[in-house]
Image 1 (cartoon, rainbow, N blue to C red):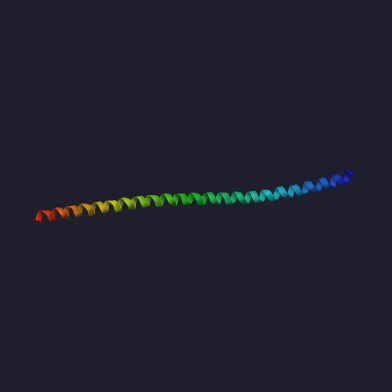
Image 2: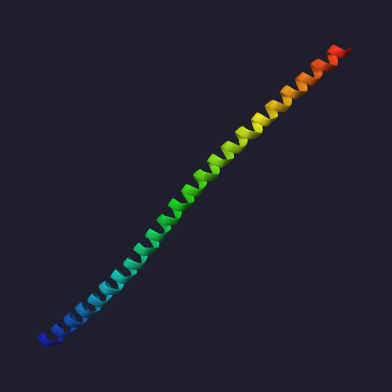
Length: 84
C-alpha cells in the first residue's frame, strides 16, 4: 500500500515538473512577445512625435503664407483706393 502511494506521488511530481517546464517555456515566449510589443510601441510613439512636429511645421508655414497673401491683398486694395 505504501509503495502504491509512493508511485502515485512520484507520478504527480513528474507531472508537476512537466507542467512547470511547459509554463516556463510559455512564460519565456510571452516575455519575448511583450518585449517586441513594447519596442513597436516605442517606435510608433517616435513616429507619432515626428508626424506631430512635421504637422506643426507645415501649419506654421501655411499660416505664414496666408499672412503674406493677406498682406498682399491689403496692399493691392490700398493701391486701388489710391487710384480712384
